[in-house]
Amino acid sequence: MDMAFMYVCVWTLCAFVLTWTVLYITNWKKKATELEDAVVEEKNDGAADVIIVGAGVGGSALAYALAKDGRRVHVIERDMREPERMLGELMQPGGRLMLSKLGLQDCLEEIDAQKATGMALYKDGKETVATFPMDNNSFPYEPSARTFHNGRFVQRLRHKASSLHNVRLEEGTVKSLIEEKGVIKGVAYRNKAGEETTAFAALTVVCDGCYSNLRRSLNGNNAKVLSYQVGYISKNCRLEEPERLHLIMAKPSYAMLFQISSTDVRCGFELLPDNIPSISNGEMVNFVKNTIAPQLPLKLRKIFLKGIDEGAHIKMAPNKSMGATLSENKGVIVLGDAFNMRHPVVASGMMVLLSDILILRRLLQPLSNLGDANKVSEVIKSFYVIRKPMSATVNIIGNAFSQVLIASRDEAKEAMRQCCYDYLSSGGFRTSGVMALLGGMNPRPLSLMYHLFAMTLSSIGHLLSPFPSPLRIWHSLRLFDVTEGVSQMFFPANAAAYRKSYMAATTI
Ligand SMILES: Cc1cc2nc3c(=O)[nH]c(=O)nc-3n(C[C@H](O)[C@H](O)[C@H](O)COP(=O)(O)OP(=O)(O)OC[C@H]3O[C@@H](n4cnc5c(N)ncnc54)[C@H](O)[C@@H]3O)c2cc1C
Image (cartoon, rainbow, N blue to C red):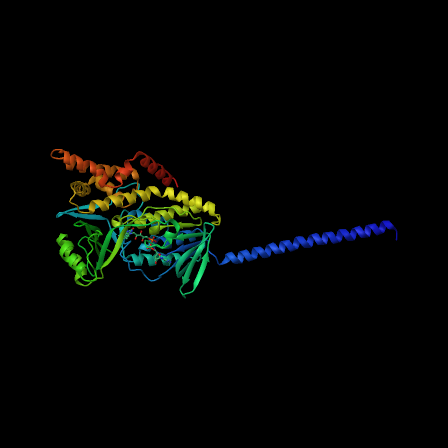
């Protein structure tokens, strides 16, 4: 064997060993990566993209919307039974439009919901009727509200959301949020079996209502109690005009009646914090009989007293107000009453919430993966700006309307109260304009500014007639303070900001 042949053999062997080694290592790495991928897959498999805390109106509607976009949603709700609550019993026409945009309009069916075409307003023995405008071309939906038992509606929403295969609706109470370096990674909760457990997702949505505990750990936002809502249900009766929300401008504040099913009437009134009779010792029953009921028109009084006479369960809930504040943490968003509240007299909380859900859903749609906390955080910041026109309009009108409904010895406030009644009685574009605002059919800041300004001017005219004494001029000037929110809106920078964000909202 010559040397040349030996070299060829040795080099061939080396090349073979080298090639085999390289191939072996490459294959091993590939297998390892595949194995790793499989482990990650397995880890992510049961996990959701989004965790939602609370399956009330907001949590259930959001779960449905996000699941329709292909997200895996895990909803944790502490009580799956039908809630028995004295709130969220009127869906404005604007809210119904939002529901239909989310594909949830059928949740108002089969719950014996009643149609409401407007409101009857009563003051000092007079009555006026203001209906939602029928000829509002810019409102593409049937212009009437629906009234119902809130619990029935919530159950329909829960059922609709959990009918989707990618929604997991679990009973459990969330105790805390799990945070890592400023990013919320999931929640710690107690499940139905009583076990303490955890769940993780790229995005956590806190939608646990007006008594939210989790909100405080995120933005420290505190709600202000404005007054109290007292109410009960008069059963087996029907109002003479069941399609109207009956609102009585009484003392100390408003009383109201509306049909919430074909046989049940919601009766209620507002109390100010300095005057709360006790429910437990019977003072409240006496207060209803002796103070509130005598102020109601006869046609409503009998039904108002029916519930009291039959021992209906009287409930009391705080009317709260809370501005929206963003959380500094990433990977989390707060929605619904845990995020933003306004006086409930305008019955618009659910409408604003559904509008928020629509906006948030559309902003999240382009993100195929919610795992990028920075991108999600940018979306949440845009959401906060885009929601402003609708929420600010509703919040300001709620604030202004609630104030004019409170009886007062203050001449300026009484003038505003009277003018509010006269304005709504005047018919034509004034009445339809205010009703379009209240019904969420035209939630434009400019329209709100126009009507508040017109009402304020007409109150000034009322105060200054028949002749403008210095005291009357002083009361007139104070009117801009009385209608809190008016001055805010007339401030040029605010007006420009509203306009800008409104343009943004309409182009989304
Ligand atoms: C007196 C009153 C009357 C109102 N009337 C109207 C009206 O007529 N029309 C209208 O549009 N709006 C009305 N509102 C406002 C409206 O009710 C709310 O805006 C709306 O219900 C808010 O929905 P949400 O999903 O944020 O909260 P909710 O519907 O209250 O849902 C919160 C859910 O979270 C659950 N939860 C709470 N904590 C936890 C936890 N730790 N773990 C798991 N689950 C939890 C609760 O059980 C609940 O199911 C009214 C408000 C008040 C106070």
